[in-house]
Length: 171
Image (cartoon, rainbow, N blue to C red):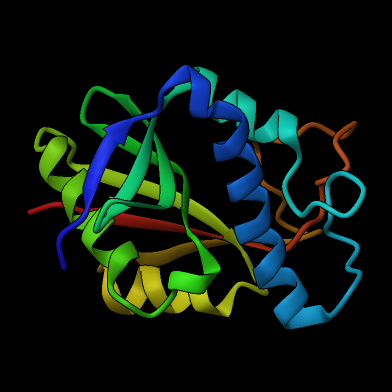
């Protein structure tokens, strides 16, 4: 599978945000139907502001496959630690190896990263399978009401959500 990761261009930012929201909403709708209490904003599983913060604080890429926008990714690199903030593939292009090829390309782009980290909601079984079985991550933490994500404050609506934290240690 050949994919290209191209830096997100300013004129594609709005479409990137909408494509990302659709991809995340697709997973929630597939699992729960129309409504779920983990939607951050209206009918969106991931709020515009969350995506914008990731883009602004990290490095965003468009995933291209055969001349088509196939998804996107945002990484945040600090020394030898990398955080995969967002990775999404257009739902109409799932199960074609695009996500795995994009992840491999990210690994190659950042060879100095020794530990990668990402988080996904408990209900995203497709993501859990992808990170663990396809990309070699390990589940290292489960955030829940008795063990909340330390990055959230008590004022955040997301406190008490059920999320998995994954790590991949590079050899």
